[in-house]
Length: 362
Image 1 (cartoon, one colour):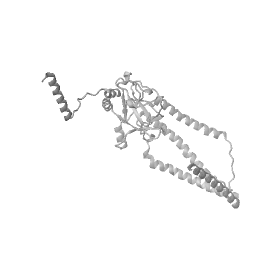
Image 2 (cartoon, rainbow, N blue to C red):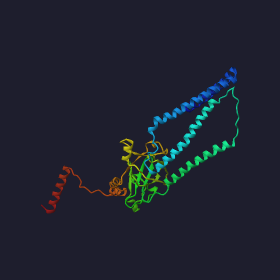
Image 3 (tube, rainbow, N blue to C red):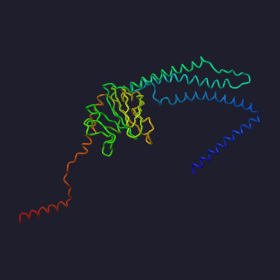
């Protein structure tokens, strides 16, 4: 019934639009088609000029009102982010000049050169120099911008420095899971068929691999990084495509099931530094899922703590490897003597006395 009503409404809307169009034609014939066209032309020209003024004011208003709700250029908290901000600034300058120039000319010309009986139309069908100009100049500008992007992209996804710490980031509906290599600095092997939440193996680690025995697993808590130390993120997913979005570091990388992706950067500001810089005592670095991944997508939020090496070492010392946690959980608990009620205890004592008498014959 609902589909029928929707279909009926669409048909009715089409009929109304068609009848309005026919009525407009009849009015044009009655009033004079040429006179109506000229009047409509003037109205549209004036409306285009109004649209230009209102539109430019809207751009200013949005920037003035909402400017404090966006991340400003030059405030990146990573070394790569500084380069990304620089590239974004050049892109905004180039496209901004073209935007304002073309939009102002477009709407102003539509108003100024509207149809008029006092002006003769000048046809300008072709000009080789002009076409060469507006083809070559944009091509050069775009090539430069794309060149910046390619250089920065390969820098971000290329080989990390030898002293970089490594963290494995795994996305799943709808949470982030982190794994740190232990003292050996090597991640243990894992296999997706070993993933078993019920038996406390959320990443599918192969426990026969000794390198897994000291790996640290964390979920539902912030990821910890060291300021001034490069970090390589090894990114994956367990179900659908997610995306590790690090807005404060100006970085993003998709998390794809079965296809690990990587990126690296160096944090240059601790969380405490950002609290002072922003004046927000509750500031945290965020991990946002930048890929629509299901009904809980908007709640898939993670946090990052950037701290000094000493603070990181203290935090790491407080963590226990997942393998050790499983060993403790599997160890048999000490068998405690059964708790016997008073009545049962008395019965047991009487039985013991009788048994003793029988054995002594008394």
